[in-house]
Image (cartoon, rainbow over all chains, first blue to last red; front, side):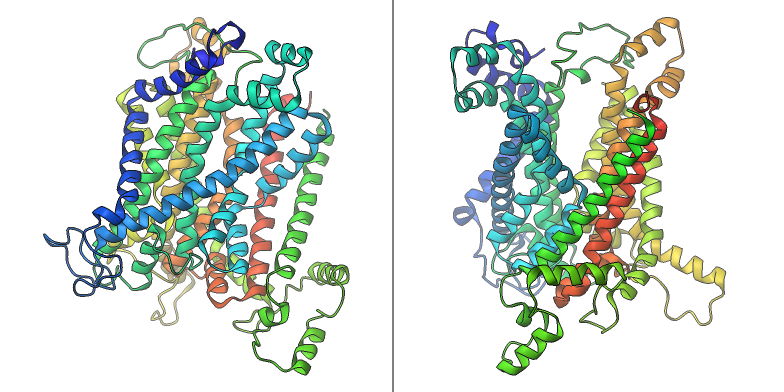
Length: 316
Length: 320
């Protein structure tokens, strides 16, 4: 049972304890640690792209679809540009889209979830009804339609993805806020005369923070995937090279039939690795935060009974 | 809640969702930036008279609410407009596209549900063992791959064995009925396999976590205490109850299937509705795009409703 989910009134210093809880998940689960390491490495390389990229992003350094060699470990693309350089710069744009779109979706989803869960009654009904409609309408076709109408630009891509991805966040947050709202310390704060804003920001939000983090990381993965898909359909910003754009270029300019696997395998693999590491972190966090997954009465290794703390109405 | 109440409520929700989607479809395309005439009719430097004539022809001189009513009326009569690309009614294009998409998507989906359920159950049952780690890692890997990229990887791997594009062999002269089916299935292999692999990853993870939740329930402990064999517990007690969340989540993944179909059909030049969307985007064929979006939304809403009704059959608690 992690400290974060216990009755917080009993915890002396809730803030460091919560931070430690998230940190412990990462430390205890090798998959989360691997995911975090890989993600941080890719972010660092992408950030340092202008300094460490071996060639210029627009420099034609060899023949079209030049083979991999010592000076170009991943070969050249359809314009004779070094693939390693392209991947570094592409990861940069893909990450920017992933993080920015997630920020938008967290702001919308978090606000909807907190408002619906905290105020309940008609606010809850109205907001959740809207969320239901958004869930029922398939994301990607709607993104395609909106992106096609708005026209291709980085800002539009970020907004399109961000404004359509918030539904799952809103639902998860709402469920959590609903349970936190009923806890004794929140009612105590209310009876002392704390306002709604203070209660939400000081007492409710810190409690749901770990879950929000898990959800954020998973949303980043989806946002990066969506950017790749939109770019592939020709809806990406034509002036920016993202990983999705690199894949699209290779596909459009017949890398497959030219046998230039190096132009198409690495960018997709890099996207897969990015999504995989985000999923590993997010899932480990969710697993650790969901007490229902901790009790298995039918373990394959050995049958054992574990304490059933934290189940019941408080459970996630 | 009574059974009938549940059915009415779910059906009502589906109907309202369709209305929301239809309205959204109207608003998105009417409130598009730029003049509707220059967008819709693609006449950038038309004279004033031409513009007015076009406006009248497309009914754009009327007020927005009036246009909305006209739009709804035409929609009910099955008029989705005329495609810019081939000047055919959009509905006619969509009908033939759908007929090509459905078998491919169905094949991939059914295959992945069967396989995903199997591996998901095994992963949950064998929790903490190497079997679970291997299964989950494989599933996560497939889940992480961009759909279109996985499709391209299969093309690279299986080039020569299976066709990498199209739906029929154009050089087949006067094929018999049986030859035609065989040819289509042969072309369908790679697209359906791509969809199956992508969904397989997702379904394994869904089934695994649903099973883990049920395995934590007290009645599993009771069954265990009664001395039932593990496999019996998994089959009769755990999986039966886990089917409820699984069916909901599979229904929710329909949007994912639609997205997958668009990307896969683009890679394999499969003449379905996904490819229709792609071509409409490239050609900025707004009526076609609008129609395809509507059809995709309607099918997702419809199958969600079906899933809700199945859920109702599966879960006796809803009626009590």
